[in-house]
Image (cartoon, rainbow, N blue to C red; front, top):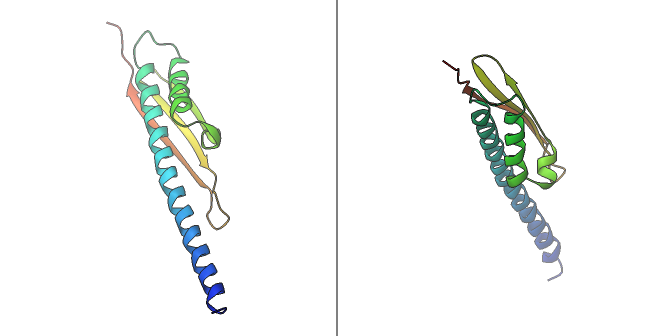
Length: 119
């Protein structure tokens, strides 16, 4: 009877670790989708001809603030580059691992929109 307790504790511990890593993966995928949506929104809002240079970044930060606050949102830096023909919104993202066996997830993503021109 006593010899099965350590095996049970190890099995439950490993199951919980697997569950936490699975939930972390799901949360990271949600965060990636939010970053992508924020960049799309930012690029679209900077595309009108009358939009100023800061409109893109402001809109992207607003979307990120609404959908991804807290510790996950702290590892995201957004910048927008505007040329005569397009607006590019870029983000550098670092999602921190929740547990030691899992590494941090770092990636870059960008969204582009064609800049409107006045006739």
